[in-house]
Amino acid sequence: MILVLLIFSLIILLISNIFIMLSFLISKKSIMDREKCSPFECGFDPMMLPRIPFSLHFFLITVIFLIFDIEIALILPMIISFKSVNFIVWWKISSFFMTMLLIGLYHEWNQNMLNWTI
Image 1 (cartoon, one colour):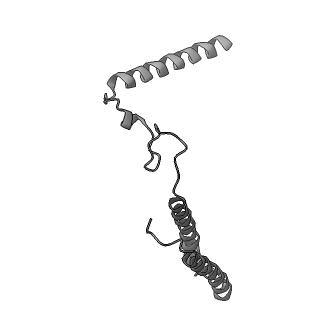
Image 2 (spheres, rainbow, N blue to C red):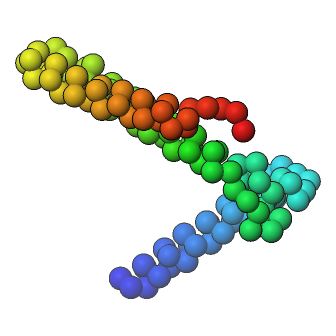
Image 3 (tube, helix red, strand yellow):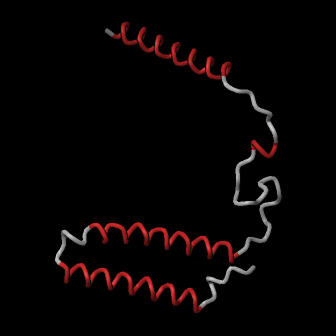
């Protein structure tokens, strides 16, 4: 029984190695360029010094985008659950959530975080 498992394991290993070698041989060859091989880091060149100044404004806009993106994902189930939940309960929960969103938006606007000028 162990001999059969060992033989099947070797066969599987051999077949997988053959497929890996075939994929390397058949695949398109591309010009290995420094720019194409380097990862994209939000417009930063990864080959430069890592201690360059980072724009805090860019970071704040990214965080605001992520927060509003998650809020949209939370609003969609509220719209879908409108027919299946008691209207008074749904209205209280939705109005509380929207009020919190508007307070957050007002705070961001008051702190000039929505100003897109650099």
